Structures are given as structure tokens and as C-alpha cells.
Image (spheres, rainbow, N blue to C red):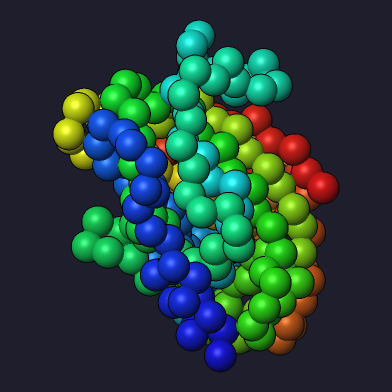
Length: 244
């Protein structure tokens, strides 16, 4: 049932009808930790291998921004927006970070946008309004293995978190849209900020804040508190985040 609702939300995202210079596509990416799992040596901070069958995230308010001056996520606050373009705000959009295209990403939608450099993006993680996981904003379903023991798990979070991010940081810059052209932006979810990483020093700030998997070692369904964790990024670029 939830899968059907997810697909309906996915395909309802349409190109905006406003006059604009080109097409801007926006993607979400949980990276290999979502699609391949936490595999050695990149186990969780407490040594668990995790394989996900689903990583559901519900999003709203997805807005591409041309900011001048460029947005400083470390300083926080609101960007100095000169131009913005958003996906349909009428209903939250639920996606599964494990169901990706050949580039390992999930298309959120394509919008008509003005020419220029879309060097910032904002969005919120919000509870789903319908389906099996209504009331939950993130749901992790999978199998955890350590020392020959395997358990099936479902972790649910109703937490709300709103992100404002600067320019995407990665192998190539994103968001440059020319007249009549196409460009893309990416929302990135860093799952190691939730579960930590065994191949990173335990005193690394990420591992200090991460929950790990030990609290859920019994398997089954558990609530997971994601408040205070900086999960959302733009590639390796940082975001300002507000919880609640």
C-alpha cells in the first residue's frame, strides 16, 4: 500500500507552467550507504552490517534558489534570494532512497526555472499524511548482521527537520542553468550521521553524535530519534537545519 502511494506522489511532480528559461531537475541521493548498505569496512560505529530494503523519506517545500551573496550555511538564517523556483507544494512527496536511477539518485521532479546559478536549495522532512507509515517522516526497513546474528528491523521517526543549504559540493558544480538548457540539483542524505561508521575514529564528531545500531539489536520495530542529527547535505556541502 505504501509503495503505491509513494509512486503516486512521485509521478504527480510536474514541470511548472510559468515562463522560464530552462528546465531544472532536482534529485535526492542516499548514496551507497542507502543502496548497498553499511558493508565492511564501512560498518556502523558499533560494528553492525546494515542492508536496507527501504529508506522512506517524506519531503515538502523543495525550492531551488539563486542567492546573492551566496548562502552561508554555517551562519544560518534565510538566504538573500533573488530568484526561486519550487516543486508543487500542495502535498508532501514520499520517496524511497533505495529505488534509484542508473546514477544512484531519485528524481524528485523537474521545474521551469530562470537562467542563472541556483546556488542554494531548501526543503523540509515532514511526516507522511497517508499510507502505511502515515505520521512518520523517515522509515528504515532492513536487516542487521553482527557476529553471525541477523535481525530484521524497522526504524520509524516522526521528526520534522527543515534544511537550507548552499551550493552543492562534489566532483562537479551544479545548478548552472542557461537559456533553453537543462541543469540539476541534489539533496543528499548522509546515513552515517545516524548510524556512524566503524572505519572512522570513534571520537570523530560524527560518531560521537551518531546513534549506532546497538539500541535496536533486538530487531523488530523501534522509534528512532533523529532530532539534532545533521542528515541533510548537498553532496558534501553543509546545510543549516531547524528541528521541530
